[in-house]
Amino acid sequence: MKKYLASLLFLSLNLQAQQQDDIHLVDFSDKYTGIVSVAHDEEVETNCTVNLYDKDGNKIFSEPAFLSEYDLDEGNRARTNVKELPYGEQSILIFEDFNFDGHEDIALRTGFFSCYGGPSYAIYLAKGKGFVYNESFSELGQNYCGMFQVDVDKKQLHTMTKSGCCWHEFATYEVHNNTVVPVEVVEEQYSGMFVDYTVSKRENGKMKDSSYQVFDTGDSEPDFMLDFENGKKMYLTKGMNDDLYYVFTDKDQKVELAYNEAIIYHKKDHTFSFTNRKTTYIVSEKEIIIKDAGKEYRLNKVKGRKGTFANFDISAFPNVTQK
Image (cartoon, rainbow, N blue to C red; front, side, top):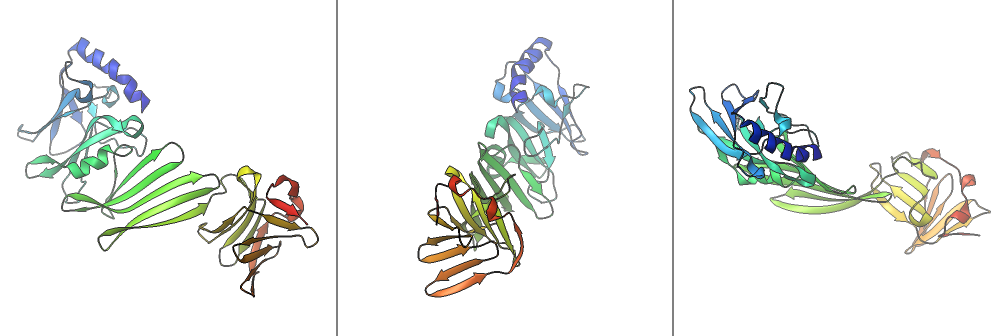
């Protein structure tokens, strides 16, 4: 997005020097034609006006917008309907059916005020022979990372926003009476080996929250892994502060138990053991034995494994004691 911002001064000076004539909008509609009128004395935030005309030459739309030199093609015409999501090029005008009523609407770029200096849009919905500004849709075009995505098949809209490398939000909306309504919002927060998810889903008219954690091995292989027939997995791997982590996940990598407190390695039996609350876990290369409330359970339906305890350097784990 920096290239767009860097072009502001160049474009402003260029337009002032040339007293540029009106610029034609191309490739956006079979019903309308468009002109971008540039006035060099306007503010940077709205350096032009977009005018649309019907086949009879009647002006049916006129609103301020922001023109970048990157909108112009080799013929000095303004390109339209460019929407490379999420971080690619997005043109001054996008002509698309946003509310799924069968009529194309208008997204008009008004500046670069979305996340990380990305393009921001005002949305005008088709109504009668013209277009009417819609605040609800415009919030989606201004408060996230660039223009929103339109899913025609599911009749849904999707937004994305982020903060740094480690926090993202993905939201899904439906359209009710020309108002966008969130139906699912997913936040993900990366923290070391784990990704924390908070999910809000609309149920019976209200958003209900749930949360879970996913184990993310990234590009590194765990020190040891047992793969069970039901799809669940157990990992022993070095994590934060060089601790040895025991991580047990379901078939979708959702964490059922993550533990990195006091662990004992039994040299004679070649097993690791630890007690979490009142439950004791004993881990060998073949199975997991769980002792709880006087009962013993064996998780031994293993279909695969990776690694071996023989390769563990027990002294490298601050939270592991050898006996």
